[in-house]
Image (cartoon, rainbow, N blue to C red):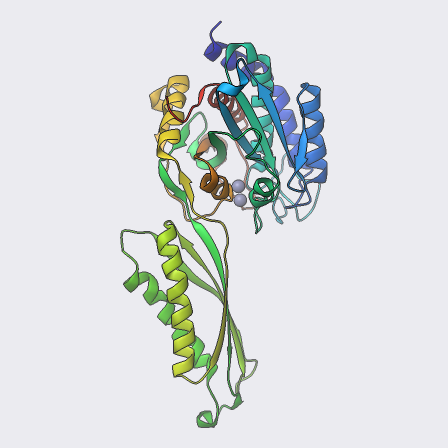
Length: 396
Ligand SMILES: [Zn+2]
Ligand SMILES: [Zn+2]
């Protein structure tokens, strides 16, 4: 039996078990950096397979599967394990047992799929060459990102992978399909915190005050100019002011206003320039109008940049496995993913797994209380992760 046939056969054989694992993880979700039970569960599953486990990154872990000639090639496969602070509204037998916590981004599926891929790779290890490194990380949903802790603790060392691959379930891609994209695929995300201070006073005597409600209003408008006038229109970027807090009554001009917002970029060069422009607008407009401004830009995840060579190879392998008709080009999204940190260190490929099923009404977006997946996608997820783990090379 060829490796491809064997992987397809095993993925089918493990489908039920992996679906059970996904349902277990779904029923017992844990928030970012608190994945204690999930981590222990994954450790136990890996040990059942006879695989070594190294804990790192707080509640993360790494394992290795060696095929023939282990030093010839090293590829890392990554899954994230955390849930979100959302109360589930799905009426399913495996509904979250924890009010206010839900696997609403599909990280339960990612973890289950990687465990399934591990079983397949372990079972077929005399049919492929090299080493597959399994990376199970915590805290994808919250800054600073579990990926930063995994990298800090050496997830990408000893051995150093030539590439790292992750999949994400995609609720607007039909089950049975995969999608890839070379280059930028997800945005950077930075949080903006602006505090304006000025002399408050009687609303009927504005000349004796610094009207920082007006200053803040100018800022909200002016900041949009950065996107519309300074940015290349062909470079997607978003700046949203999402909170405007100040004042509490009709006849008093307040002495403090706070603004919050988010900046999303698909280009690191533009991102750096935008930070500079935002700081300048805030500082100088406030100063010109007599207010004092404090600005803090909390740097979030970087853009996810898919290495063209590695992604091209993964795309080709996916087509070989699945047929060209089931592999599409995916779109760029303005959401963020801490996978971007790995892809800054080594070549990365972040691809999407179809889990939508319109006929069954499974179409809710990620981060919603009705998000769910068509579990038939798990079989393809573990098969492709195993197939890429067994075959993917940076240069081939
Ligand atoms: Zn998410
Ligand atoms: Zn996610």
